[in-house]
Image 1 (cartoon, rainbow, N blue to C red):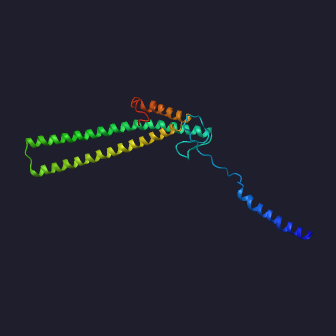
Image 2 (cartoon, rainbow, N blue to C red):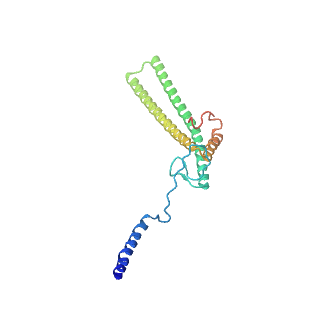
Image 3 (cartoon, rainbow, N blue to C red):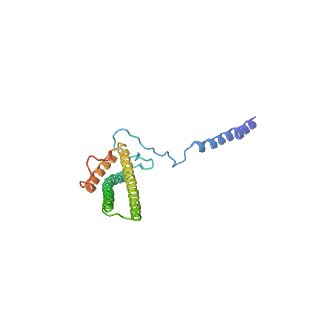
Length: 207
């Protein structure tokens, strides 16, 4: 009996315990260095948080004060650059408008010149046909250039709207550091690049 009990204890019970422990322990324990990643903090109130702040995108994740400082510098630069783009956009629109007006006035002068010449002197049918063809070609070129100018203006406007709403989303993080960087960048850009060329009422949210 003793031999049989000793055989059962050593052969059955101990092997069952060792097999159970060997099966469960590695499967349930977390290996070292595999902690859960920190998630972005979502705040709906004004805050001065530094850790786990995400700037619009999840990939732009701020973990410490150094990253917050770098992010503020980047946002400051984007806000200032937005003001520069506004100045450049206004200048571009003025140049395109003046070019279109000049072409239109030249075209009107050409039409008036042809009318006076036709009134004073009678030209041949071949000459009139050639002048009409030339006039139609110039008119077609003017229409094409005007369409290209409108497309370019629309593209620049779309870029400005995109940057404007992106800065608005940065402001809506309610993070004090990011909000200050946005405001200071816009003010700096208006001071340096505006120089009286931009109206104070046309700010970021009005794009």
